[in-house]
Image (cartoon, rainbow, N blue to C red; front, side, top):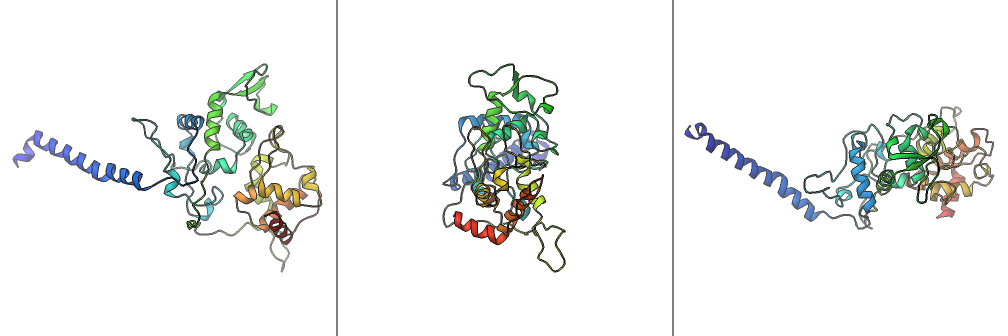
Length: 331
């Protein structure tokens, strides 16, 4: 009992036991993981601007509402091409000696997962208005606005990056909205969040618990059920082209009245969906939505038919078989 009555021996022993357990349970396993786990061969380290953007991502509280981990369940298929693996985070390093904040996997999904946002949405013309006021591109968004990342000027100066903001979101303010250096750095970080391809021959993890694709309720009795094109459009296209199909001026082209959408030959429209499109200075870059989201021919046909028959558009509908044949010709 003398040991327990001697506070010097008691607390010294407790401290040594704590340090021993810390080394054995925390530090050594972490060092072992760092030694045996390497980044994927195709992974690209963050650029200098992206590293600064990562610090802004943390300081502005983005990590509180966004995860960066694609779980291995089918409902996460929309966020990445595959479930996340440990090697996806091997390129993340401590911020500095005192701060870790290396892996921002997050714990809550108030907003969508961002593990592959740079692939899903590569255009700064989308990210910048979204940061200024998320309701510009996603009407139902509950994300807070970050107007302090922008300045309003009477006229543009050399090197300024102007952001196209609809008048109704200017709240009576006049002038040109210009992205600050911090806004551009934050966007650079988001653009570089991409899932690297697994090495050839590596088995790709599967998404578990597959869900049934959305079906429309308009199919006739005895007929094959139709895909819900409106829902698929909402999930894959609406954040850029908007629910009314009018797009976003200066950022994303309208589908309403579009010659590409109304063309009787759907090949060009399909090519854009499958391979993306870069309109240079006219509009923001469109990702390869069909390829990235692994949309099936029936799903693509449903989206195309929704776009070709909505908002006053009146073009012939395409079939899944027709789209499947065209996809093969594009490969």
